[in-house]
Image 1 (spheres, rainbow, N blue to C red):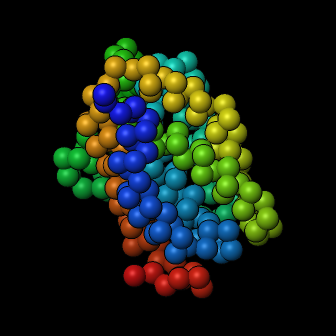
Image 2 (cartoon, rainbow, N blue to C red; image 1 turned 180 degrees about the vertical axis):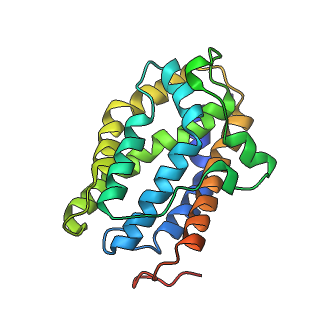
Length: 213
């Protein structure tokens, strides 16, 4: 009997998720303004890059699109005084897997049902709301005065309002497991690639918790 796709995604992407968490753990995102700005820039770039795919799944599930989170990220970046530009698909190279994940086109005119790549990408994006609950609590306790956290507040809210709908839709969709899982892994890889681009363009001091490799 084939394993439930939700369970397969969780187990198969575990190492990728842990690697990204470890890299992010080297940043003191709620202690240093520049680290928080780097985190926001990462999330803004990622959400912009995969917006088309996420919105295709959202429309299929009759959920609002991803624009609200992107607006929140821009608002919070402005509060952090960040002048860095987002990483765009053009900055990410021409590797075939990158071009596959970073879909182009206008989702509002695409009547096709979401495919395995759409679902795999959206699994990572929607799943981040679960971690957003923890991050939101940490931000409320530790974020320096003057910095906004509307993105994390919205992300935390999504954990209750969107994630259950996404999981139900995932389980009811007729999807091939392997390409869906591979797309989710590549989305974690894309996130790491964007982070490295941001840190290369905007060098920041290391967190006191752990030196970067």
